[in-house]
Image 1 (cartoon, rainbow, N blue to C red):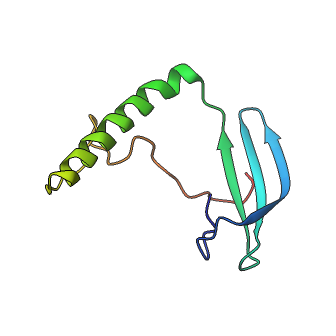
Image 2: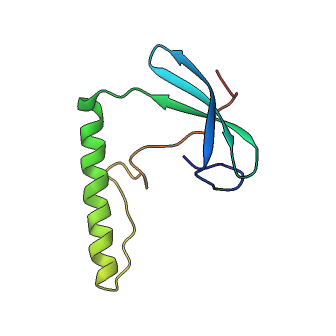
Image 3: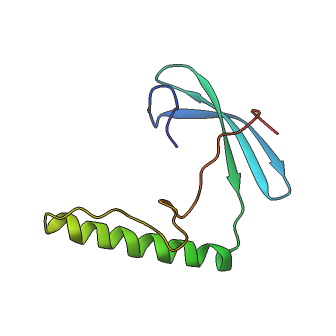
Amino acid sequence: MLCPNCNSSDYKVLDTISRQTDIYRQKKCNNCGKKFFSKEIYVNQDEAAPLFTEWSRERSRKSRAKKKGMSYDVKFADGRENPVETKQPTSPLF
């Protein structure tokens, strides 16, 4: 996790809140002093395996194309560019 303000990976966890399948953490960047939140989601291993397999396959294709000097745009089966869509939180904790 990187600080959204300065992209530093040096931070301290201030608070942790558990909700059924989610964990919310309040963090403070040691570099710039800004506070930010992260959300961790429990994912069943059976649910995550196909996403990881597809992601690793596309990553290796992109790497091989780069070594050969070609460009390769990663596209997944359903048209996404990333196997997991990231969403911005609407509120800090809920």
